Image (tube, rainbow, N blue to C red; front, side, top):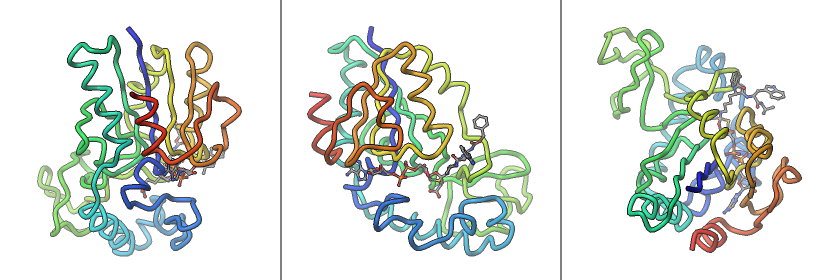
Length: 229
Ligand code: BJW
């Protein structure tokens, strides 16, 4: 059996119409990271942070999974139906739900999910709805302590134990559409390459490109389906 871990970043969703973070027209060209993407930014101005994520939620409603998301879902399908003797785990840094909408089930959201909120009192992660504001009571514990279910700088990403186990067990590690500058995800290739083959798919070489056995340059909607086929 072949075990594949696929790490995805903002670049896989770019051709669906979602902005990346650090590109020429990236999200961070319009916002200061420290204002939005830190617990301190949220404590200072929760309404501003909420407005930012509400903008992303509105954008997400208008986009669809692309051929790269669908190719990864197809790979999982082949494993489920027995046409390929393998297993694929998608570890995504993305907070969008395009992998799930493409049909993937084995998806680990290490940086959280845009369409959920998290209660800092009880840890519940209920679905976001349009009436959710920073002082809205949590539907579980009723405290007014909901925040976006997003991992900000300085916070520990989710599901690290599960990710470490998958990395240890994989035969192939694939990174798609990630700049390789944000840790711990940027370090996964180092962990995997001790025992697994490694490939990256990107428009341009990422920060960690020298650590990969192979680099496939080009738009993910072209390169990823070609690889899966
Ligand atoms: C295409 C394409 C197409 C475009 N086809 N490709 C100093 C040194 C080392 C580390 C640190 C340090 N100081 C602080 C740290 C830690 C910090 C960190 O890494 N900082 C660096 C910036 C220096 N990390 C953290 O704080 C993390 N926590 C942590 O480390 O805890 C400690 C710990 C960990 C583990 C165990 C125990 C303890 C938390 C990081 C949280 C990141 N959160 C964000 C925001 C999420 C929510 C939101 O959306 O607002 O996550 S930041 C942002 O960056 C987002 C992304 O998931 C993440 C990665 O970005 P990504 O996906 O790579 O996007 P881009 O835009 O950077 O790149 C897109 C790529 O696609 C480009 O390469 C393009 O070329 C390519 N592309 N179109 C193919 N069509």
